[in-house]
Image (spheres, helix red, strand yellow):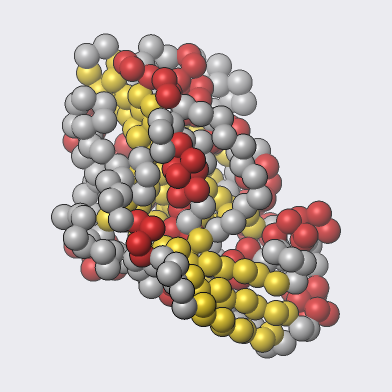
Length: 342
């Protein structure tokens, strides 16, 4: 939890069968906060603060995660392995304290998805989710309630304080409805509301998230996909010089890789979201690039993140903009997806 001058940080721990920890921050210096976040609109101000001026953070008990299997590599009937971390990334990965149910301590399994965290940046290196479009359910979102994952330290996760009274949204990395299928649909829905699955995204991007997070739906409804199943990898691009805000370096780009079976073989396509202009505008700086969603080559993901997806290169779909000019081996995706060939 980030504390600031003019704030009181209260921790109240309730010891019972659920062993739930509540962490409450009460902001007293309203004038200072108003000056810090003057650009915040009133509607978003109320939306980002629980109870008006109090942020409530809850850690789920470790017993909640018992029996979790997470991402399944054989979900598509053809193995799709998790990406390989560099040696430095493995050293900086948060370690799952519940190692009884997993072979790799860097992996945090949830319902139908898994996450590997960068403990230094308090953000996911990547998320991996299995989507079964034939069993998907449209559960209502309800009121957002985000949780710490008690299997790793709270200091290795970004909590509520970052998102209070500014233009940042808690952006789902695993899209909320992606793992929501089958008998465990409600549990999967709830699991997506972990701070481990959250990354700071500019509100203007999140409000227009259909283009970015709608890629899975577009694919399921338009492409000839075996068993209506997709595997999706997602994560932020983390650079050492990312802008620092409230003690956190904000990622300026996000990536996504979609994998499915086309015919009898795997097919893979990579995408990149650039939000540099939006973030720099929020911080009062000049940005070099325009925000947007692009189709990119798998090599760009490896170059910018260090994550190794080399085994997917043989299955990568050709980069094509249907006659439009390719710029730096990428092309902008249209809102209607009409220049996206899968």
